[in-house]
Image (cartoon, rainbow, N blue to C red; front, side, top):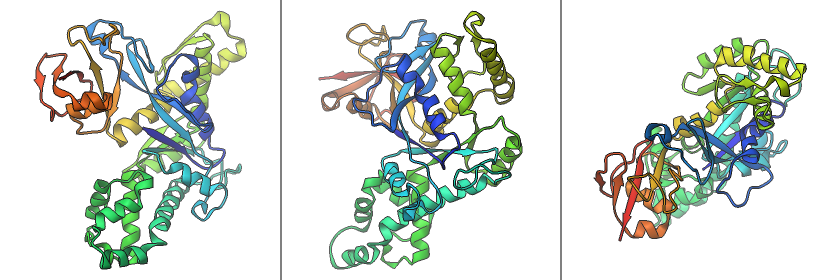
Length: 395
């Protein structure tokens, strides 16, 4: 699971990334053995079954605060993008290469309209331009990948026995694009699977649809506390009704998480409130925190950072959280840890899929699964639901 954080320079992208990953250093373990300099660990937030079961969980990865389970995901802070990136302008090539393995994108924009297309300070800039140009850059990048070899690809299909869909999937395999995505893109564009007959316009519509399916995007409308932000946010929601747009103040979230890390406030990421420890705060710090409370939390109900992460996983990718256990009566693993693991699984995952995610040997030895809540025996093709607590039975 890799979420790319993208955007042009000076919109608060790096601040968003830092705010999202700060907890990693303070209180959390994570399951990733190697994190590159531009990668980090963020966390999605769900209600933990420990409240329902009146137990105290002990996560192997991530953490739990006040009944909220924080599950780790990889985040990638992608190099700043400017128009023309697909042709190598700015750090374009670096940006696009970094995007290859991303499952979804969080596009951070300056909703206040105070930075132009190159990230330089300005006034009255239309932030809708940023949404359009980023989509266009990825579309052109996709088109370049397939377009440069299109005639050779068509010729190969015509003179050999290779299957068209399999050949397209192979061409796009480095972008985490599956044959199922290709089939859906073709269907959505009302094209023929025998792509040798496609013209340039049809090919471009295909790669546009493929971008939507393989690199779904959420908009983090950052700097929402600044003048013109509300007006611009409303315009964006009207112009892009199909997109998820979240009002956001990454700077506020970073301030809250740093203060919580230093035990100056009590704050659960994503919450609409916090409690100050007055004896540990200067007057300047108190005023800053009061500003966040009055101008961000009371108006927008959160800073938006946690909401963006959650929506990327649950609204864009539609993943679910499942809790595997070894003892369905006590909800524990073999070491008596309560609800030790929380796995993110794609939609339509089965009990057998969960077994293989835990370990290949467990998948190979699968007999059945047990619903820990109902103690009902489940077949291998049982479709998992959000929040399921499951024991896998093996040979």
